[in-house]
Length: 140
Image 1 (cartoon, rainbow, N blue to C red):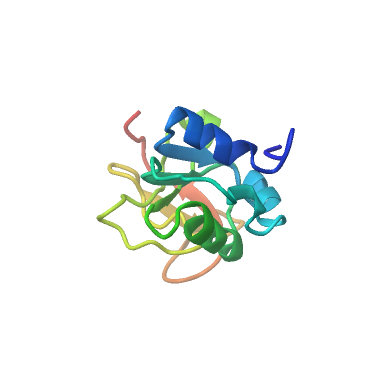
Image 2 (cartoon, rainbow, N blue to C red; image 1 turned 120 degrees about the vertical axis):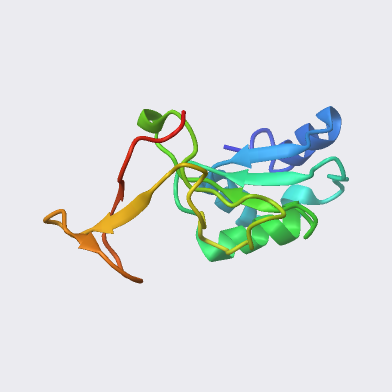
């Protein structure tokens, strides 16, 4: 967790090593968020240019905290979706080209054709909930 030996650990690493991309899990973001702004107090953070989220869905509140508090509203967030089996990112915003949407991985990456199906495997059209599938092979 990002709180050992204290909650400023991540900020100290960013400043010491001039980290420009911070790619972490929502669980770590929520752990820092639970401490309010303590995790970034006294930190410069000016080396950061991009924030990333991976491993689980990020809730909109944690996304907003990450963007506002860690990124100081200067760093886009790439909320990525992929699995070990896919060998790479399949759904992700492109910084500067895709509007950021808190809690959403947004759009399929180039060459990826996602769809939603019901529990019987039938395609679902329009805005709905279902099972995410990839319809064809993908680059990677």
